[in-house]
Image (cartoon, rainbow, N blue to C red; front, top):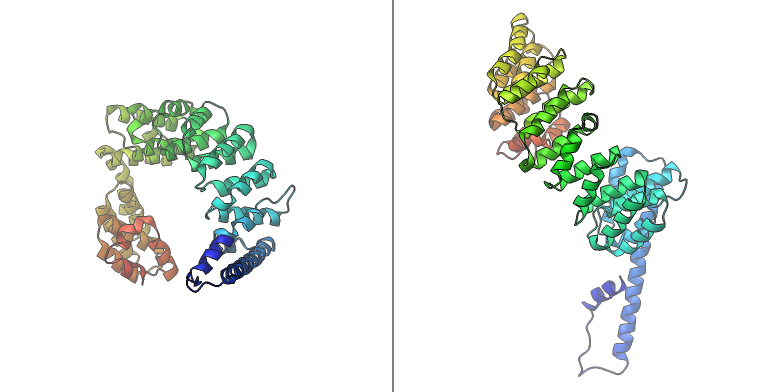
Length: 430
C-alpha cells in the first residue's frame, strides 16, 4: 500500500534534471516523499479502522434485520484496502454470542463481494486454524475469489477431512469455484448416502451443465424415496442439460408423481414442472398420465390435465374448462367466477380467452372493491400477448400503489413491457 501511495505522490512530484541537480537535494526530497506517503497510508488505515469498528458496533448492538443489507453495502464500499480489517473479524471464536456470530457472518458476506486477493493468505490460515464457525465464514468469503489455484486445493482438503455443516459449506464453495475435478467429486457424492450432499451435488451438476454424470443422476431418479426428496433438483438438472433428456426420464418422473407414498405437494410440483422438460404428447405419455388425471385429488388431477392441455391434448382442455364453464353459468354476476376461468385459460396458454374473462370480471365487479391482483393478472396477459399499450393503460388506471408498481417493474414476467416504449408510462418510471 505504501508503494501505491508513493507512486501517486510521485506523479505530482517534479524531479530535478541533471543540469539543476544539487548534492543531497534529491535524496532529501525522496525521504520527504516516503515520509508523506507513510502519513497518508496511516491516515487511510486509521479512517478505515474507525469505519470498520463503527460497523462492528452496529452489527453487534441489537441490529434490525432490515438494516443488514445496507450495512453490508457500507462494508463493501470501503474497498479492497479494508479487507485485512474485515478478514480479522469473520471468526466469532468458540462459543460466540449471537451478536458476535451475526457480525462475523455479515463481514464474510461483504468479503464475498470484494477483491480478497490481498488477504488470501490470511483467509487460508484462518481456514486451517480458526473455529468451526470461522472456517464456515471463510468458505463463504472465498466462494468468489479469483485466486482459485491457491484456494481450490485448500477447500477440497476441508471437504475431504470434515463432517457435518463444515463439509457442506466446503462443497458449496467448491461448486462456486468450479474448475477441474469438480465433476468427479460431485459424481462421487451421488454414490453416497448423505442426503444433503446428494442434493447439493445434483444442483452443482446442473450449474456445471454436466452431461457426463447423467447415468448417476438417473440412478437417483430411479430410487423413488430419494428422488422425492430431490425432485426439484432432479427436474432442474434435466432442464438445464437438455441434450441428455430421454423419454425414459419423463416416464420416471411421471411414475414418481403417481406414487401414493410420496407427499402430495411433491407429486403436484413434479407434474406442474414437467412441461419445462418438453415431453412429447404420445400414446405412452397419455397412458402413463391416466392414474394422475384420474386421481381423486383435485390438485393432482388438475395439474395432470393442465400438462396435457399445454401439450395439445384437446380432450384434456375440454375436461378442464367444462367445470369452469358450469361455474360461470351458475354465477354470471359473480366476478370471481370469471377470474377462476381466466386463471385456467392462462395456465393452458390461452391468453386470448383469459383476457376476455378478466375484462368481464372487471365489468361484472365494477361496483365492488376489486382486488388489485385482478388488474395485475390482466396486465400480465396483455404483456404475454405483446399488447403493451393495453397493459400500460390498464396499469395507469388501476388502483395500484406506486410502491407496488415499482415491484412489478422488477418482476421478470413484466420485462417485455418494461423494455417496450410503454414501459416508463406503465410503471411510472422516470
